[in-house]
Image (cartoon, rainbow, N blue to C red; front, side):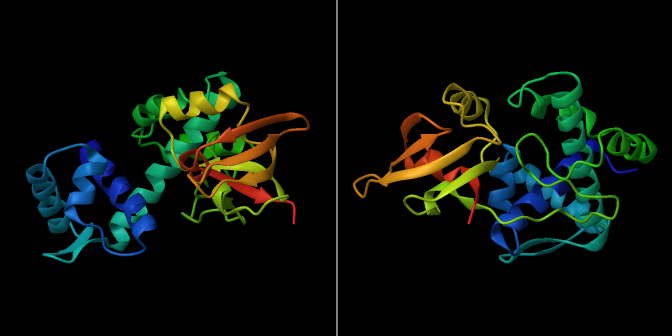
Length: 220
């Protein structure tokens, strides 16, 4: 049996490796897990001994097939639980993450597969993140950060990079939620902020940080 702590580390390494497109440093893992570097070193030794990861000093950590499979299953459970909480129990998108963190460690694959079927085999969670299927494959789509979208181009919000409560609550205030149509009206060189049209009428100027954290699927 893999412990919850080991599962959490494997999931963190998987997500970090997606961002870095390569090996993951121990400092990055410590930051992601909000823990001391010494604790990370101890866990890396445990995971390496169990053949979940490959670690080289000064080069970093890579998931081995066993560890990769566990990480994908955990992400699948987490994101399916988020969909269930959001769609069926009416939790908001800023509430589901913390609850799903607890539920993702339930071991029954039969339960997870039945929940997937019950939900209609969703491809993306309430934050727009892809949900792995039974084989661990992620759905793909064309999407770009709002900050990369050109003036007068229209698209739809399909995901968010940041999942913090303050950020998601900020987005809700201006109806910057999944499915909302956006048109880029103006870009300001001074600070990278962007003026956008939200839906048919509303206009709002957002910071570059917000624009970097919103994923858009354009209509072109």
